[in-house]
Length: 309
Image 1 (tube, helix red, strand yellow):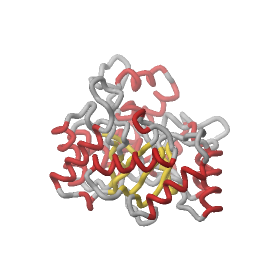
Image 2: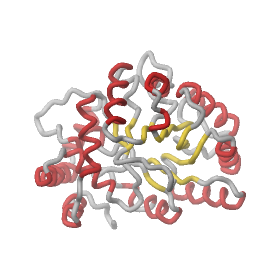
Image 3: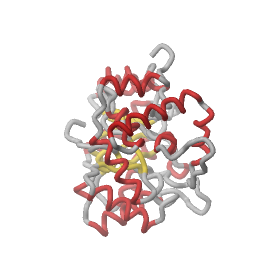
């Protein structure tokens, strides 16, 4: 992972083919990379949940953008396998087929970071880690990661890789934000111990931490119901208020402060956040310019500090 510069934020590709069509996705990708963005995250399952979609739409749009713009070498490309019904699980044959499918859709010969999207306890980890290692040895993948794994399963995967001389997980992607801090109790210490770099997803809590949500204000977004639910949590509202205060002091967007808080956490390489319009891209990239003092970090953390944290 040391040679993979993820930049200030990883651009989430879950919106491509969902809330952003092809042309809007292209515009977002152009703005992100032109603005200094470095890493883009997607998955084979994006966006199978949308009626009329089958899965693979995000990767296909991204692959078309690579082919159109010729910018594959400018991007750290991250994708995930294992959660899509068409290629579900982490059996060796499934892993190999899923990656070959992703490479075809992405129109590239390699993925910089491949993550197992979900754990698969039905398959021996020796089988999964061997299959993933083979992809690295074949040059199809540069680094391996795990998303939504428990601390215990990350430890056992690390032990399997070490015992057999296989490529270990060096990247993780889990739910983590200023208002979702459950991983800090057990998972974060494990990541730290194993030297695994975290790239949190839903880092803006489905847009709640963008600053556009407030009591009585309606927001036009496919995720507004989920994001708006945080308004019922006094701790989340207090954290948002703190982020607004810091943002006002620094003259930056609220979302940039929320992302900068994650960037300041010991195990985080870069948070993952999506943009469905070009106008949202500068706010994400601004996270790299925010400098939070220890006092800022304490203020932001106080409202949602995990019990026992």
